[in-house]
Image 1: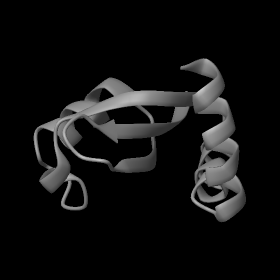
Image 2 (image 1 turned 120 degrees about the horizontal axis):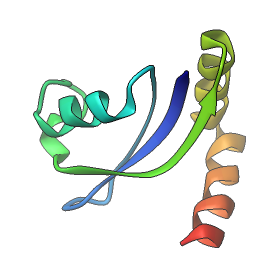
Image 3 (image 1 turned 90 degrees about the vertical axis):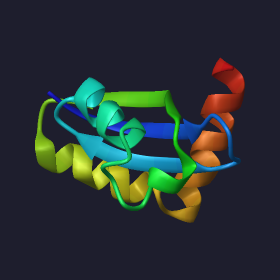
Length: 82
């Protein structure tokens, strides 16, 4: 399985969108400051995720969620689930 995920920084007003095959391991990497783009805003928590059976589908969805339309979609979904 592949996951598209949205992280939120616990201490800063930052979000990060990514894709992985092992979400728990990837979160540990983000929180362990092993990811250059997220290490300054650690610690992180997963606030949204989607599961896919095909890697290409997950990467397409990640690309969409990083677009303006995708960010607007996330605002609606995250607000309604919070």
